[in-house]
Length: 210
Length: 210
Image (cartoon, rainbow over all chains, first blue to last red):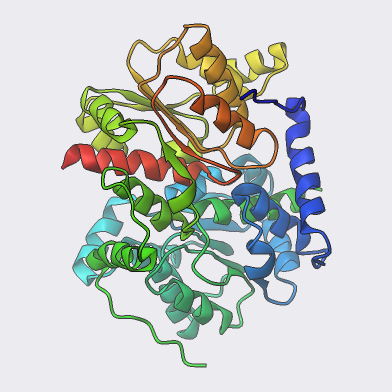
């Protein structure tokens, strides 16, 4: 079988991809403010389910962009998510991306407390002296701990990107976050991932830069 | 609405997740050698499509494991994929994970040649003096360049993990790889990603370690 490649210049690949996504969404109407986020997640996953499952609290995108512009940090629950975030754009606004998961104290604290490292990472994030956006693409236990810290009045994140993936307490942890008064972008259901978390951060970063 | 969390110990979450995946696969029969790879990809994505779309050349998993045991390196096309690979397990076998995408010479070469950085990264990988597994989760242009390098007899990878995601030449680039005589693990269709590439590497690494 002869494989026919399309001739698309390197600089045109992303633009053409977004065109195709737009075409295939067809009659599905997206909120114009949320649209760049939804499309970038579909671009990252080739999964159109996200047009249906991504949930945004009121003005979540605007609030996320404003936080970035004000120099907010981003805290992730995986090195992968941190790795996928456009850190130079974030730095241009004075922000920084953190992932505490591999820190030595995190492993110790988690072991002592019988929790996941993700839980211990959220506790460590409390010590940051800057406004924080959380981008959680892996561990539902991170979202559960954030929920507790919010309920106890210990932290007030600027935005929670709640897109862990998986089978144990993933759906439930997302529901918890949607019950708080914190701005959120959540992928309902089991799907999500570090790549999705990073894609949402980047969509906000690119909008902030415009 | 009251959210009910399941009580699962941190150490048990992954095992319980794999149990759920097994239950939900139901009557779908997986090749027992490929099964740990397929299940780990589903674990990473919560997307059961992969039970259908992951294609393995003959003995691809065995060959990948043997290559790891012999100290093969892994070359990725994103920092995210590299970040997700269990590098300490890889190092225990003498291997190392590389991603050349952010290297200064890659940006220059790509600009000079009017190619993507992924294409230039594959050319750079030719200079590695060790057996190589390629784990491509993002750029179809990386797979296209690998195909050309293989056809020209310039490289003979131990294994190609071909799971780029997207809309432009993604499907086609995977078809090209499946036409070579190089062992491959490919996710047919548009889906894939850096997370999927890393998950496949880790499934092989954990099997090698057993």
